Image (cartoon, rainbow, N blue to C red; front, top):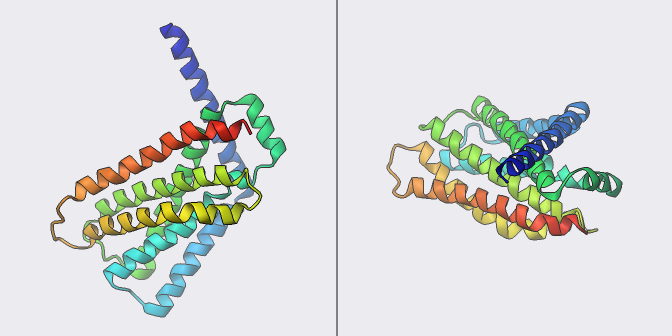
Length: 228
């Protein structure tokens, strides 16, 4: 029984890795999504720099997460919307729902982490570096970026089954994203001062649990969409 379980896990892992490699190969061939989002980030931050110079700490923090939100919408939300019904049927025949959604979550998380790192680099170069605790902000940035990628991957999977895809994503995403952005902004403020914020690590743990919750919801609910 144990050998069967190990073999099943090994086969499932190979399928997930293959699907992730497929997404990476498509992204490296097309590249319009990556460079388009990168151009959007650079132009947005440059306009902010020309308009305000180096903003205050709270404004710097708020602008960073607003840019991250639009990066997630443009980079991650298209993961399901660009697949045709024929291609989805092909994936249905060669892979299971669990492997497919996990591969999408992993790929979009890696893509969002890369975009988050580039966004932070552009912010530091153009808007200065007001961070006192850089690595703490980097940790929150990575957790927040992964959380945003998970949310929009799941929303894109639901919206791909509807005709009004953009409107449906906006309606479903607003009540989920706003509390998450408020939590991210509150947690990341710690990185701009030496003041001790009580319960900071508890909020970080809450953010981590939120990411795990989105993964579990995707694993539980996506098979029902997959059968449609």
